[in-house]
Length: 276
Image 1: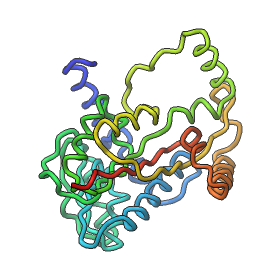
Image 2: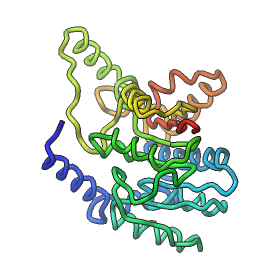
Image 3: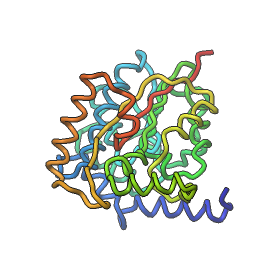
Image 4: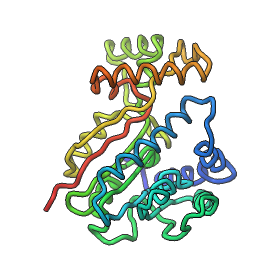
């Protein structure tokens, strides 16, 4: 467990990462057009899949919160389809990009708030759906975020939570996989220290969701590869995107969901808060 001073440093580092001085503009631009980047293609797919499932599960007149809305790629698409959506974001620079996106789409720029995902200003049982994409990777004790999501969800409401899968880094690189296997066999495999934006172990995440009292509903794995050797990509990004799409289509046709939990780059999990 880190000290309060370390936690404050992590929070400041996360805010800096999503500032205009760092990557805020890149995060805003990646949702405006296709790029030759498998990672960015996966993030755009994550947005599209989330919007589709939220629209399917949201009851008539339901309320949605995009917790860590960033530049509003999900929020803007929901509003485009007539779904009211509140946004909460820690970075003021990202909120500025969110307002610009909404303005460019001639959508309402209101109901965007600056705040901390660990302790929001919303009343308990306020939302039917909470979307939380990529956020928990930037919070060391992310169980706090999960409990906050549960607090502000209505009974029977849905939580959409995503993160990048640490096993993707291992299983698509035979050199890394072999080294990991050797360390595990010799007892030298140690837990990795926390760092902001980390890739995560879905098994740990599921235990924390169970501890928080959520009920599992659905999983979507997004993006396969890239294939690497000794951490070097073997194919150009454009080829990796085509390969990822083809392999994903095959696994979906076969109904093989379990392998996607281990192999996919982005893990998108749907849970519900038990009904009262």
